[in-house]
Image (tube, each protein chain N blue to C red):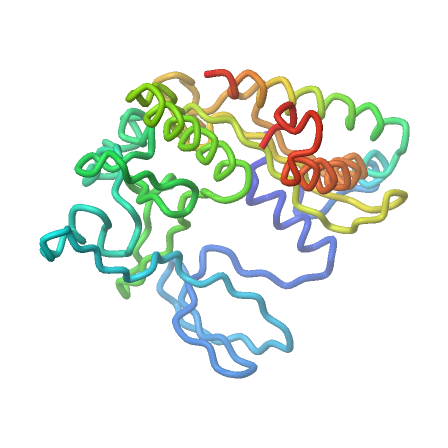
Length: 256
Length: 40
């Protein structure tokens, strides 16, 4: 089985791009990036063009009750993400064995009229083992909550809001430990010789309770491949997505 | 797999007939699982 890390290395090599994995950036100056790796070694890399994804953080919004009391700690975590029906504070080794720790309804437990979809909700923890190097620099990816995952959580929240208003109940739920998601990363949009990577993952967050293998995922569904078919998929996705956004006939049949 | 795509892998990645098959399979796969999840 091909690991995603090996695949990414192959793609970078194929495009002639130099890469460094398992490295955390500590400072950026014009034309120069300073970094530390897993081993704690420090270094710098010069660049002409760089794309950096900043640390994932919420907005520092303060929340106040009607009487003026500060309720921020009941609504959001210190990073600014909205607290929902997750089990927070579990250490990683326990979290990975507790799929129920991931939120199901994305509803704030203290204020049930507050929901948070997509990147707005506070995840209960990381989905891969957090790593801190010998210099105390944390090198860990954040759980993915954009794209299809956001769309699916948005659907759960929207349907619950409708039911809460009409029937006073919130029956819809889907945890990221149950959710399936697909992602297409384009690497050339030509319909003749373009290419894209198609990734299908079930569940998005590993669930070793349900899928008892070393990955905690459904290995029949979870799949990654690269080729021209991906470019066609991306083209189709682009048009169907806009069709869905416009609410044109049949939009409900189009997946998120 | 090594850290580079082989010639054979590159061939399959752009072989139109095979990619048409993959396009159909991937669409079916994604659509089936997405619809299944939708009606929870």
